[in-house]
Length: 338
Image 1 (spheres, rainbow, N blue to C red):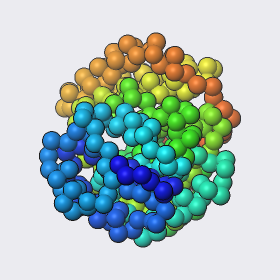
Image 2: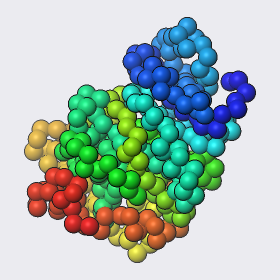
Image 3: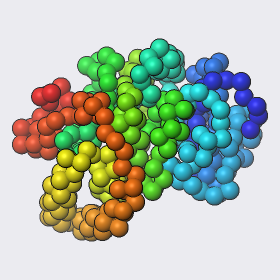
């Protein structure tokens, strides 16, 4: 890496993603700010990623690891290596738009209480719809189920400007996460034991527990392809989501709320039965494996517990998304009773 003089780092993690770089990097370069430095963090790619970058974008700095460290550890190591004050974790399958950097960065600069934020994230495959992993800001309910402003479970709303106001959120999407580097490092970065999925929710929960705030800044807009690491139909994705969610709850819930984990595990069992009735035996088995793995991780998760704050409790949805969605038939964020 060359010596830097810019204050913002746009970090794009890559592993064998030359096709994604070819498709999505041009927009990042086109709409980059004079204050920002684009850095490709390569996890020991074995395809033509480095050759492509050398030939097509020789002026873009790279951090080249000799091993594949995955999402969490890859970003953690990279952020430890750079001095920038503001860091953007940007997925390699995100298409950005004009001025996407300015509004979130100005918001973080002007609001010292806020440590992280995200733009509005739309679906690159269906540009009129919100994207699954972030939409217009993330939340969790009383039982720890994540959802978004613009996405409840698998229901994606059309973007009709209904969520175009800045709003405090519980979590910001890891697809385009703006964060103050000092705060990121102070809370220990992404939990590397998660491997993949929901690690940004855990990160944001710890940010809230430290007394900081998080927001969605919909004046900034990006388009996310999604599913580039693990397809939605993958049993491994089911395994990681169920396991990591339980670990996250144990790490971050206040002591009085820990019994909720047992309720979640019962509901997980019901989800496993539902998978069986749908003929998805491998997904049901993935939930079983997730619970076994959770039991094995209880000691390490307990050691990582953080003190909860009023902010995280205030921003959490006090009701049940399962009840709202499946019993009351509420499919839109604005239908929820806050």
